[in-house]
Structure formats: structure tokens, C-alpha cells
Amino acid sequence: MLVLRLAIAVTVSWLIALAVSQSALGIFAPITTLLVVQSSPWSTLGLSLQRILGTGIGVLSASLWVNLVGLTPWSFFLGVLAALLVARLVPWSISGQIQIPIAVVFVLVLGPASMGQDLWRVIDVVVGGLVGLLAVYVYPPRPRPEAFERALESYRDAIVTVLRRMGEESGDQSAVLPEGVSHEYVPASRALRLVAEDARGALTKFAESARWNPRGRSVLPRLQSDARRLRRLGGMTVQVRGVCGAADLLFHRTEPSRLEPAEFQRIVESLVDLAGASLGEPGARVVPRAPEVVRRMSDELAEAIRASADSLSHEGRGAGESLESVSALGRLDHVRRQLTVFALAGENGSGDADEQDGDEQGEE
Image 1 (spheres, rainbow, N blue to C red):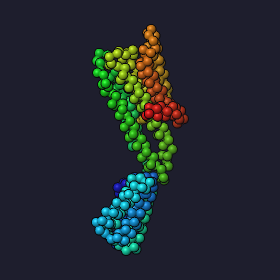
Image 2 (tube, rainbow, N blue to C red):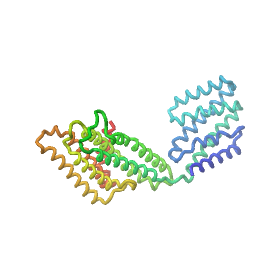
Image 3 (cartoon, helix red, strand yellow):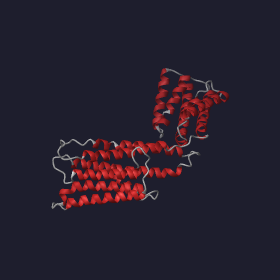
Image 4 (cartoon, rainbow, N blue to C red):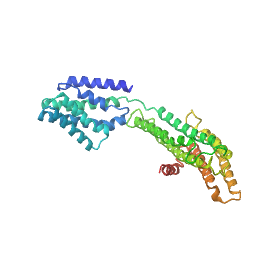
């Protein structure tokens, strides 16, 4: 639909230029329309003014230049060079800056014309920009949250997959990894950052499609909730990456772990089950199960984690000897609490500040 809308807008812009413009070629109107139209009203508005002004400035300055000195290889080179230098100084986006040299090249290639013709070229740019704006704002496409929901599901699935792999690979101590070699789940945990970026990009596109869109009012109220869900998953990612790092140093190393691998695997498996109840099962929507189910599973897991930590402190050794094991259990418990907040906090925003702080500290 966007392609069809753009083709119609460019054609209409060209027809208007043929009917109204007095320039020899009504080429700048359809070109400007082609450059202005974006996928959403918000992005179109943000870029259209830059592109219209950039194209207009380029057309006007190049017209004056070519009429003043004529068209030679040297004047062509100096005109393009000056346009590129000026574009770098303008505090616009790259797409807005590049319009200046593009317009200059078009004018120089077409050659000198009368000042009246040059003025009509600038008017053609304005006409093409206005047609582009109308093409987007007249019955714009309805925002669709499906793409963001799919990105959120992929993000959730990636987090759960890393947790599951960490539990499966934290086996017995018979196999010892060489010094400096990590478990296979460590690169997967680091790759969660890329999945998170994809989800943030999907949310940004969804928000842009709704802003300044008369057909997007119905989805505006959910944007804050969607951003909160994504932020909470980001907080979980920080803790999951942390517990992966702790487990990587704890198991399959020369020094045996105080925390039994079978006990660690059992806790991680329970955490994965809780993730399925709080975030939805893999392949399904990111929607929690009944609150009482999540609360019961979370309480049982909390009791198991505390019991495991207590057993480490009752073995007659100093607490410092169990520090790494207790640290890993603490991070698992943090993920448990984050999963519980995701499922039970609803729209109250409870826990957002703590998770945001954890996210920022983890990124640092």
C-alpha cells in the first residue's frame, strides 16, 4: 500500500507540475515527492521540512551559480564541492543534508536557464513537498502492533533459550574446560543485546506509525504499556547475562563448585517454568498466566533458592568459600522477582525504577 500510495503521489505531483509550472521540465516536483514520502506521518513530517528546504536551497543556489558562471567542468566541480561543504555544516540528518548536493547536481546537469525558470524550479520543489505531505496525511495507514509483538516474542524466546541452555550445560564436574574457554551459552547471552535492539527498533517504528496519525489514536494508550514490557525484559536480560557469567566461572572449572550442578540445574529448570508462566510459552504471545499460578510458582522457587543458599552456609566452612555460588543463586532469585513483577504488576508500574537502574548498571 505504501508503494501504491507513493506511485500515485509522484504521478499527481508530475501532472500538477505539467499543468502549473512554467519551467522547461517539471522534474523537481515529482522528485521532491519521491524524497518526502515516508512510511508514517510522524517520520514524513520529521524529514519533509529538511528535504524540502534542502532541495529548495540546492536548486536556488545552483541556478544562480550556473547562470552566473555558466556550465563548464570546473564550474560543475566547484558547485558540487561547495554544496557538499555547505551540507556538512547544516545541523540536519544525513538524509536532509544530502538533498542539497543532489538538487545541485540535477540543476547543473540541466544547464543554465532564465531566472524565471529557476524560480519555477523552486516552486516545483514546494509543490512536490506539499503533495508528498498530503499523500501521507490523507487517510494514512492504520498502525499495526503485530510487528512489535513478534519482536517481543522473539526477545522473550531468546531469553528463555539462554536460561535453558545454561541449565543444560551446567552438568557434572567430570569435564573441565580449559582456561579462557567459555561455555557455549555465553556467546548466546551476549547476543541478547542484538535481539533487544531489534525489539526497540520495532517499538520505535510502531510509535512513529501512531503519532500524528488520525487513525492511530486507538493504539496510543498502549504505547506506554508496550515500552514498560520491553524495559522489564531489558532488566531481565541484564540479570540473565550476569548469571550466565557467574555460572560460566562456577562450573566445569579446575576448582569444584560448592554448589552442586544437579541442584543448580533443578533451580534453573524451575526458573524456566516460571518464565513460561510469566512471559508466555515460546511461540505464543507475551502474556502471563493466571496471577495465582505465577505467585505460587514464584514462592516455591524462592524457597528452593533460599534452601540451597542455606545449605552452603551450613557445611562448616567460611562464607567466603561459597561466595561465587551464593552470588549465582542471588542473580537467579533476582530474575525470579523480575518475572513475578512482569506477571503481577499489571499497569501499576511497580518495580520499573529498580529494573531501570539494574539495566543501566548492567549496560555500564
